[in-house]
Length: 502
Image 1 (cartoon, rainbow, N blue to C red):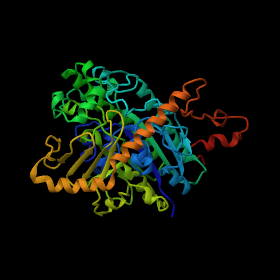
Image 2: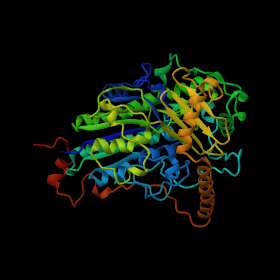
Image 3: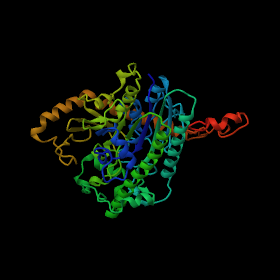
Image 4: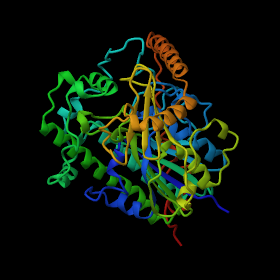
């Protein structure tokens, strides 16, 4: 039996609450809505860690940051950790990446046989946080609120240029697969950087949301002192005191964010059109690395366990999974085992060390009872934070903060912490026991601090004298493209055509 082709669309910082059952009705996203109609849709999917590099390493490996060591956006993803690209490639797949994956360290492939673009973010240790210096802002790379006050319209930006290139290369690669004489199945990951801030969008997409009724958050900004302690750390890390955020700033930022979802929909549509035109049977997955608070409670970006930051969209269109909505919590850490399951690839040799589990059975009606696990140990934290999503409950724990317990059925905006409410002490005790069985926070904290200290030494050393960056340099084999004198002129045009000539 032949193995299926697999196409993975990953986007960056897409708020999962906007995908209650596929894209919200009011979003202009016809291609994603078409995909949703054919997909198993996961309403309550979560990131393994609400930050780019940790969330992506977990997504690729099926392991949490505490297992991979990818705690933050400057932590090395070591080459000895297998990813779904390794598992599938080992089983005979062509594996390809077009776009962002925020690999830190000298291994910029992690199992991909081919990489079509460079990354948009640096691959070195320069963005390492430092738990030894709580409250210190590293202004040249920490987020600040300038993304909100600077929001609006632009026809080109750093991120647009990047995602235009990602879509172009991915579309071309789909045609290459169709006309190739390589009989191996393929798995291509197409990873965009939108709708990640800055909140800047092209006019054609901006205009789609002129009369949008969702330009203000459901939960308005709170006074600083009314926030929990971690949210205060996020505000401080984002340098909120240096900015005066107006209602117009909020509306512009959210409008641009929604517009960039429509921009992405067009880009994804280009790739899917190539798949359909070349009649290649393909499993399609759509997922994000983490969400964006989008001004809810006054918070922006990610770094939080609140729903806007931690919840992500996830949809899978596969012959072995029934289209429909699943409300049981899952995680993007489940992606690696799910892809292997769908492809019939054995992961048994590493399963004792993986945390994720296949969601394929859920698309066949099988119930799942294990809690979803989330971790955070990067900027705006000074000790690791952990979370469990279990049924309707979310339980958050950190050595520095009071416990948080939310009933998401009764309180979807997480406004009432039940951890101190007498009638919920039984639930709190049960979830705390599950959390303590999973995590030793003292050891986790020590591991993070050791990693940070080592990386600061290495980074500062490597910036002295000759400097060779780890950034991926895409290979462009010009002598193998179009028409060259080592090629047979009788074959070159026909080989490049799909369908081939008579």
